[in-house]
Structure formats: C-alpha cells, structure tokens
Image (cartoon, rainbow over all chains, first blue to last red; front, side, top):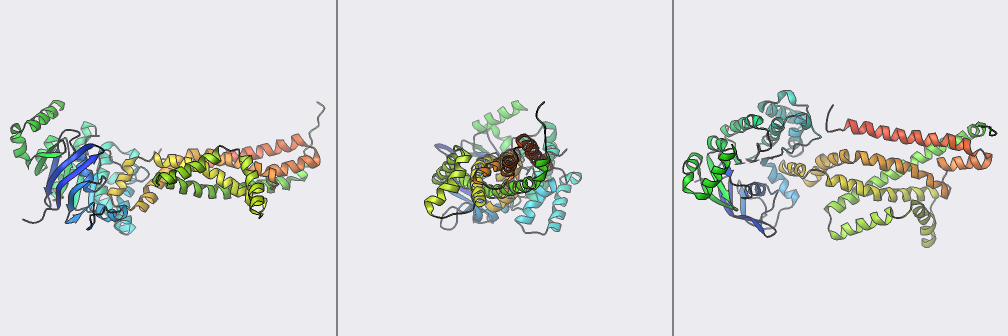
Length: 255
Length: 222
C-alpha cells in the first residue's frame, strides 16, 4: 500500500489539565474526502487545527506527504517562520470565514499567491479570477467581504484556500455559521472539489454531506476515534455503537 | 465701550505668527513621527514580549502619562543637561520631550489596536503560509491602523496644542510669537483673537483630514 498523504499517529493534546486529543490515529489517502463527525467538545476542530499547527500538539506525530508538521528531525518545535512553507501546502477553510476585511475578494485570494507562492501579480490575478469564477463569484471580484453574504464569503474562503493548490484541504464546520438557505451553495462547491480528487478532511454536522461526499466517516468522542469506516457502512451500522447512535439521534432531532 | 480694538499692531508683526505656526507644525510633525515609531515598536514588543519587556513598557507608559508635560519639558531642557554636563538647543529638547510624551500615549493606542484584531484573521494568514513578518505587514498592520485611526486623531490634535508649551523654554513657535507681540504692544485681546482661530482652524483641518482617511480606509464600502 502506498503511503497515506496524511498520517496521524498517537496524537495527544491538552489544554491545561483538559485532555482534548487522547491518542488519535488517522490515515488519509490522496484524493480521499474524510468526514470527521462527533459531539461538540469531542476534539474534531482541535484535530484539524493541529494538522496545520494552528494548535501545537503535545505528543504523537502528524505527517503530511511524509513531512512531520510540528517538529523538525530533532523533535524540536518548528519556528513560525519554518512552519510557513509547510502551512502553505495545507489549505484551510474556517467556520467564520476569516476573510481579510480590508481586501477585496480578489485580493483575498491573490495575497497568498503573490506573497507566499511568489507568482507575478498579473498571473495571480488570472488564477484568483479563475477560482472565484469557479465558485460562482465572477461578478464580485472587487467586493469587500462586508459587501458579501455569508455564503459568498465562505466561497471566497474556499477559493483562497484552493488557489494555493494545497496537498490537502481542511474544512472546519464551514457551513455552521451560515443561514440554512446558504448552506447548499457552499456544499456544492465542496462537492465539486471532491469530485476533482482534492484530498479533504472535513469536520461537519451535515450528515447528508458526510454520506454523499465523504468516502469515509470518522466518528470522534472524548478525544478518540470511536468508529471509522466507509461512509454508508458507518451510517448503516450506526446501531452497533451506542455513542454513535446517541450522537446521530441528537443530530436528527435538530433537523 | 471704552476699549478700542486695534489690530494694526498684530498685522505689523504678522510674520512672527506665521513663522510661529510653521514651527509649531514642524515640531508637531517631527515629534509625532518619532512618537509613532516609539509607540509602534513598544506596542509590538509588549504584545509579543515576555514579562520583563511588558513591565519595562508599562513602566515607561505610566511614568510619562502620570507626570505633567510641563515638568517633562523642564526636566529634559534644564535637568538632564545640567546633570550630564552638556547642552542642546531648546527646539531639539522640546521635540524629544514631545516625542517621548506622545510615544507613551501611542503605545496604548497601538496596543489596543493590535489586541482588537480578530484572532481568526491571524489564523487565516498562518493558514495560507504567510511568515510572521508578512502577517504583520499585510494583515495585522493594515487592520490595526484602521482600528486606531479615530483614537489617533485625538492624540494628534492634543499633541499639536501641546506644542504651545514650548513657549516656556523660548522656542519661537506660535504661542511664543503671540506673547512677544503682546509684551511689545500691550494689545493682549487682539493678539489672542488672532491666534485662537489659528489654532482652531489648524486643529479642525487635522481632524477633518483624518476623517477623510477613515472614510477612505473604511471596511464597509458605501
């Protein structure tokens, strides 16, 4: 078997005395879309933020394309400067969009291209325009984030991440801050990316999405992976695991 | 009314007021520039520094902010040279004083600005692979300046008015010029009636200019 693109082993992380991740193992193959589900406080967002080291991890290992993310060969924490090029290859889309409010949609996407990838302004503009067109915002290039709806802002967020051509894309509950009627337009974009073979790790509450787009579901609780498997199988056999059953029941009630 | 206004004396010495105003502006500009550098550098040091740095910056801020500016002016012009056995001219001394003084206020302004930047924006900068310096240049600094612009105009205006204190160490700025005319002509009311609007108009122009900047850099486009 070829080496997985993302390989997580024995990942541990505590905030003070609270253990948030308690030995997580996870492999993600190239082109795979893995959905991470679980009750709030189960550690899924922290897991995602550890992968690009927005949160440092205490113990264990995360390798993306063979490179240990948080530590160098001598197991010393990497400096912020040394992390920058590693993070550039790991895209992330945030729950609250986190667009740069002082930059237009176009400039939000271009910033990483010109400053991190070193691409010329003209070419960066072309690429950014292409991606924004692809997410359906060709007519909003010059708009500031404050002039866009939540769904539009999140699509800019996705364009900003994928324009960097990352090896893997991390999506952190990207629809939970959106009005219900705007969820569809964002999920559609993600669906398209999955179809194109973008490797994704998706933290989500959208079960239909997890079933239809995710090739695999990982169910986490109390900092551990409890159930893992092909999406349809996991959901079909949910009854066999008490915690997963309870979680899914609770989600159903909300919808 | 017994008093007869006579502005002729004021007009005769108008050049004292004109050059006084120019010098006032010059002093304000130079000291605010130095003060901004001090303020920004120390705010960054405070935000990113350890406990020792934080204590040192706080000590500077509190020491300067809780002492009357006039005392500082005397201290820098008379005190330090006499203790150190050297001398510098009054203008240099005053610019240095005002720079140190405004620096203390600007540390607080910039620090508040840096603190007010949503953490998510820094995360987003990290996530696209910006280095710490790039994050400052393209994300934190532009956000900070937008946040602090309204408070900056306060500092600028009060700093410009504070240049009038240079009068006490005989720097020939606007207030000094006015006093000179007053002492030589005894036309007290006339002089102040001319100088007062000069300060007012200049301060208002400052505020107005900064308001245009605020609007220009607004995060909400109208």
